[in-house]
Image 1 (cartoon, rainbow, N blue to C red):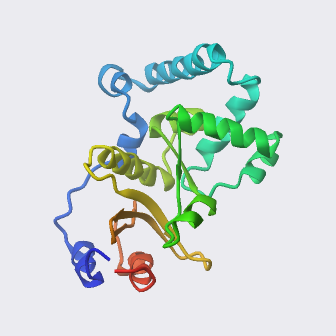
Image 2: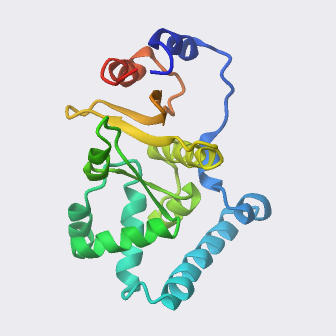
Image 3: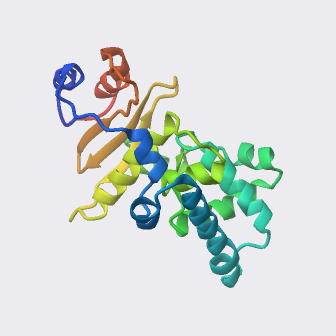
Amino acid sequence: MAAPFARWRDVLDSPAVPREDWRETARLGGFPVPVHELVDDEARTLWFSGYVQTCLERDFQTLRTVENLADFRRLMRAACLRIGSLLNQTELGRDIGISQPQVHRFLNLMEASYLAIRLSAYSVNRTRRLVKAPKLYWCDTALALHLAGETEPRGAHPENLVVTDLLAWRDVQPRRPEILFWRTAAGQEVDFVIETGRRLLPIEVKAAARVLPADARGLEVSSTNTPT
């Protein structure tokens, strides 16, 4: 691990951590126009509706990559309702009435179009990272809220904010680190792990007003179950 667990307790106990309204950040997202130019929710809703319409009816249709726009829309909505969850393509397809191969193809298209993010699970065996169930996130929290029909951010949205920042940071590093998550068969989990060479930095995201040492249990367990 990058640092002994005892050092993390100092962060948890510190009153000096700056406060920021993550909910407002999630509602606004990261697209420049909704953030800087649109002043109310109605205007932002119209902008996101136009963005989705452009993606579906112009870009994807021009490329002839989506044969059924209604199915694609339903899958985007279902994906945005599941951000931060383990991806189960069979279950996802069953819930919205399309086949698993179609879910797989549509998700590949969403990922290639920088809409969906599939985050791999950490494993010492790199081949296993390719076959273990990934976690699903979205390119922008405000767009995810719009597609899901949600008005209020929930617990998975701060995770989504963090992962998009981590991926943006990764992409400008000279030696691109891996951004992963850590999970045991028993369900103990750390939201994110940054792997640089043989060094690992675990990151746990909490939206609670008060963070307790118990909230870092996954970090503590991971420190004894991953290589140094």
